[in-house]
Image (tube, rainbow, N blue to C red):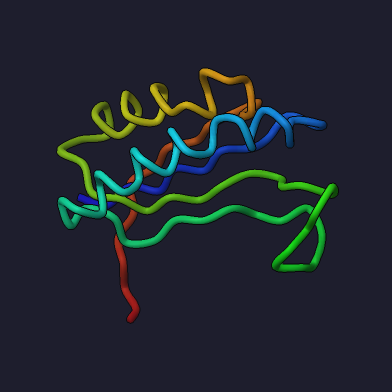
Length: 99
């Protein structure tokens, strides 16, 4: 089943995000190579594809897991969690209707 993982950044966590980004992306690339990722990306803090020092408000991942518990365990082990980027992470089942 598909699951939505939404991470919400702590204020002023841009430097931590930048430092943890390579490890975070490596985990996403592993899901992608297994064909288990639908989409992923950050929420810019301003209306720009290049937010610069304004940074980000969080991230969205839609990926396939065996269960809600497996999705939560994967999200809890994210480098952004370990680095203190995320203040909160929500994980929910998702049913894609479109496209």
